[in-house]
Image (cartoon, each protein chain N blue to C red):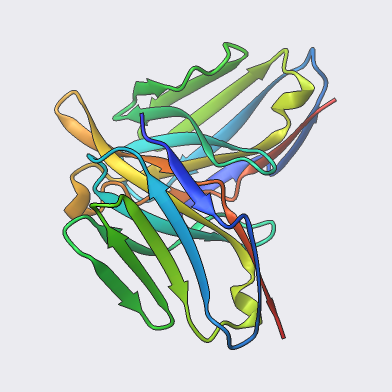
Length: 118
Length: 117
């Protein structure tokens, strides 16, 4: 099965700095790579995702890059703000099929606790 | 509210109790998932139901028993749990399709925080 490794486990930055979180995956068949943000006591929420036919995707201060050859992908947050403080999870997904329909099957990384100091 | 509702939000139970967690989604999705979130561990997939049929059981102990009566509701029945089962149990749902139609985009509920004494 798929195995996702995420680093670092904790990351502390000053407001305005950039933050980078890296993930590696093992299954070359995986074709979808989302990033979820989970604030304390809240549900994980999708913040950005990338599909295997794209090398980079950007949404305002957040960007994700994918290197399929090396099987790794990264989350980049620029101009960090205190409200970016949260746990960030990467995931990798292929597809499973059952009964003629398909559904997603995500394997998550261990999570990174990001703290942005004012 | 994101459309996936979990109840109860908090549950404390003894090892001999029987309780159930409930999940309901109003998004018209056809796949529903149970994940376990423990401290310092990745989100662990427990079960997947696709169109009410169980398609994944990730070697989960039989003291956890899922039930999916329809595509909108998912239950997790708990009995004779162990203290190490204490965790946040997250329900999620997704539409069916392919990667380009967003079939693997999960919408999570807020979770049920379970404490086993």
